[in-house]
Image (tube, rainbow, N blue to C red; front, side):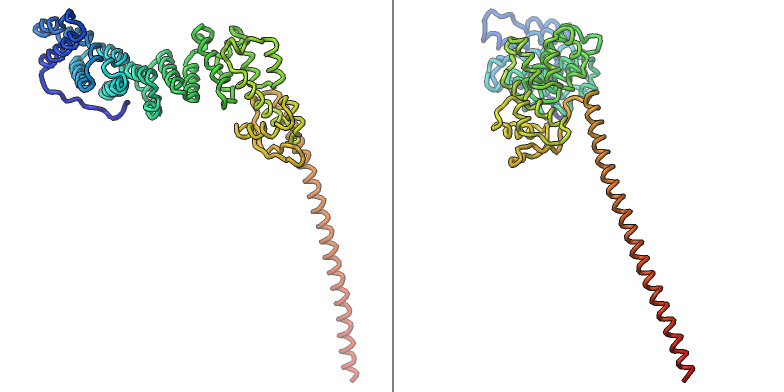
Length: 432
C-alpha cells in the first residue's frame, strides 16, 4: 500500500537493461508457446537507432507476460520494468499499461498474487511525485486488486490521506466520483456497509445540480437509498434528502422517493399503507421486508417519543403505535435506546416509558409548532414557579418586618421602664 517514498537502485545502462528484460520476456513466452514472436528482435533495432521511447513502448506492450513469472522472480522483473520506464520523460504514458497488467490475475501465484501486485503498485505510487496525477490511476489499480482479493483492511489506514491526495491530483468531479465509487465497491465486497455507504454519499455529492436528473445520477441515487434502507443501524435520512440527485427521484422514480419520505418522517401505519398499494415493490428492489419493518418500528417509537408533551409514554400507546403485543414493548424500548434514538427508563410498576431525551427525525414547521407549544408550557410552568417564589418572598419580608417591629417595640418599652427606675433611684438618693 502507499507509504514512504521508495527508491529503486538497479545497475546497468538503459540499453543493457532493456535487452535483458526483453530476453526474459521472450523466455517466458517460449514456455507458453514456441511460436511466440521474439520481443528482443523487435527492440534491438530501435535501441540501435536511439529510439528509446519506441523500445519502451514495445517492452511495456509485451509486459503482461510478467504476470506468469515465477513468484521469486516476479518482483525483480517488475521493478526492472518500472526502473526503465522512469528513464523516459514520457513515463506517464507507460505506467497506466503496467497498472492494468497488475490489475489482472497473477497466474504464477494465485494465492500470493494479490499481495505481489499490491507491492508493485505501491512501489509505483510511492516513486511518483505527490502532485503527479498518474498516482490517481495507480490508486484505482490498487483498488481493483483490493476489491478482487478482499484485502480492504490493507487500504483502510490510507483513506485518511485521500482528501489531500485528491487535492494534490487536482481531479475533476467525474474522476472523484469514479474514485469514491471504487472505494465504495471495495468496502461493499469486504462487508463494510458503513464505509461503503459513506463513499456512496461522497460520490453523490460530486454530481452537479445540472446533472442531477441523468440516468447515471438516478441509478447511483437509488443505490445509495437502498443501501441506507438496508443498513440496520442507519436511521438519519437527512443526508440523502439534502442532495439534488435524490430530490430528482421525486419525478423520475416517485415510489423510491415516497419510501424515502416514509423513513424520513412518517410512521408505521403510513409504511403499511404504502406496502398495501405497492405490494411488489420491496421484492422488486431486493429489499428485505423484515429489516425495513424493524427499522420503521424503531423510527415510529422515536417519533412518538419526540412528540410526547408529557415526556412519558404508556406501554399501551407504544404497543398500539408499533402494532406489537404489550409484552414486547419493553424489548422495543430497549432496542430504540440501543439505537441511540431515545434516552429514558422503563417504569414497570406504572407501565410507562419515561423519556429523558429524544431526537426529531426531521425538523420542519410541524416540529417548530411542537417546540413552540412545549416552550409555552415550560414558560407557563416557570411563571407559576416564579409566582410562588415571589409570594413566598413577600410573605417572608412581611414576617421579617413584623418580627423586627415587635422586637423594636419591646425594646422601647424596656427602655422607658429602665429610665423611670433610674430617676426614682436618684430621687431617693437625694432625699436621703
